[in-house]
Image (cartoon, rainbow, N blue to C red; front, side):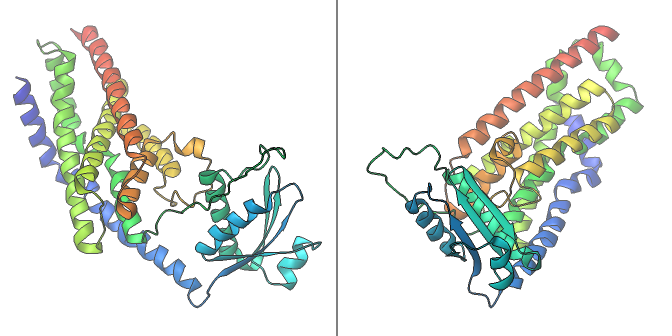
Length: 357
């Protein structure tokens, strides 16, 4: 019986092919638009060897720390020039610097030139990334400490806009997996199949699997097709193919479980889509689906709450470096999310079944 339901639900999903196109075609469209827009923005800096910004340093800040920042900035195309006894406004106006930074023991303050906002934003993004990723904090370094070791951290290898958006947009639309099952839910409501199944001998777990298995299969297959198209059309580089495929699969499973949990709770496909899409937008916002996570100014504490962030970062780093420390967290996070959401959906289904049996 369970195999028959899985097979039947798979057929219903395939008949609603326009819904499946959401996870196949929409990512390709956004990849084309966003990667092109990003390239056009970067072209504005052609012909400029470096972005220049001024800075001043408080007496409490270790010079070695600033030297490390300057080296990292130089590697990112930013030249930092030190000033003494100059007001930020004078430096920005008279020396035509895009930004001016005041380094203090407990952090920094950045002033931006209103006529050079784009370059100033690059400096701001660089400082945020350096501060978050490499803990440029001097307030907890005691003067009595000797043998201070200063390291020049290596930044993540450059990744093209095609590779970045070619990866993260596919993952983002994969989290809209609930749309793929809309045909099944509509059919069940129309022909009152749900009520018939709820009085059958099938357990709530089996009824859940009858939807979960075909949805994961269709979503996963759609994302693989979209990934293949991204390679053919845009030359997107997917690092470590087997590991990338595994990450896409667990992302599909977690997205499906999340969508089914919402549907089992609300028992209304329209409300479910609104709730799921709202959650996915928020998770994508902090996860780097709209603004590259390496330049995002959002606190890391917010980013790591998003499962999309872990998946995105794992796949992007696999693409440009061949390895990623976020692969385990992505697998664990999505695995836990799949289990918890599935359990909640099965429980909600069991409660509703007892109410109508």
